[in-house]
Amino acid sequence: MAVDRSVLIPALHNIATQLRIDSVRSTTEAGSGHPSSCCSAADIVAALFFAEMRFDPQHPQRPDSDRFVLSKGHAAPLLYAAWAESGAFDRSKLLELREISSDLEGHPTPRLPFVDVATGSLGQGICVAVGLGLNARRIGSDYRTYALIGDGESAEGSVWEAADVASHDGLDNLCGITDVNGLGQSQPTQWDHDMEQYARRWRAFGWEAIVVDGHDLNAVLDAFAKARATKGRPTMLVARTIKGKGISFVEGKPGWHGRPLKKGEEADRAIAELESQFVKLPQPVDSVSLITRPGPMPPAAKPVTPQVPAPAYALGDLVATREAYGAALVKLGQADDRVVALDADVENSTYGEKFSKVFPNRFFETFIAEQAMLGVAMGLASRGAIAFPSTFACFLTRAYDFIRMACISELNVKLCGSHAGISIGEDGPSQMGLEDLAMMRAEPNMTVVYPCDGVSTERLMAAIAFHPGPAYIRTTRPKTPVIYTADEDFAIGGSKVLRQSGQDLVTVVAAGITVYEALKAHDELKASGVLLRVIDAYSVQPVDGATLRDAARATGGRVLTVEDHYAGGGLGDAVAGALADDGVVVRRLAVREIPRSGKAEELLDRFGISARHIVAAVKTMAAGAKP
Image 1 (cartoon, rainbow, N blue to C red):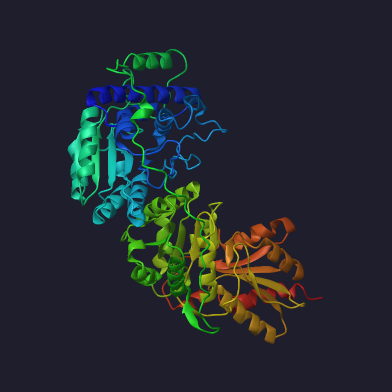
Image 2 (cartoon, helix red, strand yellow):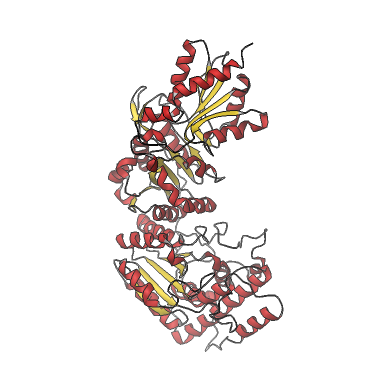
């Protein structure tokens, strides 16, 4: 039931005041936090939660509920206070802020059911919000997405990547709010309170931009109504606010960012001042009664058991793993409509274009904006999609902070890095992903796989798609022969022993393109009477420690790794870590200097990872084994 504004506005004013008090109390109790940043946005959040958004406090993950992203994650106490005010949990819990036993962390994470993605690394929330808006289209929902960003984080390039993508896609279900409080962490923000500087930038990107006094609740509600009525483009409310609003000795003053009020006289004075700002309501209003709720609860989704067709490759077929990635993506899309794909203008190289032609409504193009691509993938994945963003492995480095936050959020984002390693050839070092395995392995919950042929690619794509949490698949440019039959199984955390005998002197562990170099070396060495065990360590994280330990014992602790990757953090380190407790010292062949352009086979040999180098290393290691 609509509430007359003569009642609603004072009720919202009191709610905003309570949110400020709760933010001060919780940060003071914690002894850390950002109460001044909470105070500037309290009126906006009160208006959003209790007069604008449609949601169910007891079931925050309902697919038909409006979504809210707190991009300025340091204002987490304000978010928590709003949900407590809505009845989602008891207000007393707010005083457990930042305690190790509490999920009310310093910045929001999805440990809380009302948080879709972890925020706090600035410039990401608006990218995620674009993904949430696109997801509404994907599922045919009319839910709206709101994102609160800070004026300080508006200096981040990813904000403007998101602005461009949202405008291009005409996301009129997306409404952003910039909290322009004029003060950053160390100094005034870039444009202070020059509101037109912000507005004209958003307008230049094709957004409806509405400049508003962020403490005038009537004006804020009018702006939200205008945003809902705007069609064909997203809206940004550019809200002029005062940092520390409501606390006279903090308002608009520098030096208060990230500084809680001290227990005792300072906090007491602030709370007393805020409490004096409560107004008498024309009639009693329960804040929970103001919430606009969705309709009847939709039926729960039925469990999905997708059936993915087997690979159709024959032994000996020549196929690049990047091509097999595209074919596998289509099969996954046919098996499960939760599968979506994203691209950064390289779909004809990653072979994501195969998916785009079959499922154009589940393919999202961000153009050359890798940060936006990852943020959008995070938003989609947070609402149930299985998101496959792909680009060259080397270009994922610029989106690594998004990957880190996707891992903190434990989202089903399945990254593909193609054109990995020096085996791409003539394009040179700027295009060669040689640090990607190290990047991905650094995240403890990231599954990392590296197939060598078409069959293993398709099987591993299905494995990571339905394995919970983030994953990375590394694909390569050259065509390689299919060495596995279609009925082979590839489990996450497994490996394949491709060559072995009872007389093996050395274990060679390879992955991807170097599997073939290891097999060539095996054949050459066998002809001279030296036998070696060859393992395809297709699962780089988790690595198959049991198989590696068995092989190390069988070959007298002589283990050699070979990888198309820099020496630090890749396959060699994964194998060494698995064998360290057994006292096995792993010798590693890897790319140990900045490479250059050349033909793939020339580069593999020049930079020390070809069959010739494996043969030489094995002979040296085997010599020590002979009586």
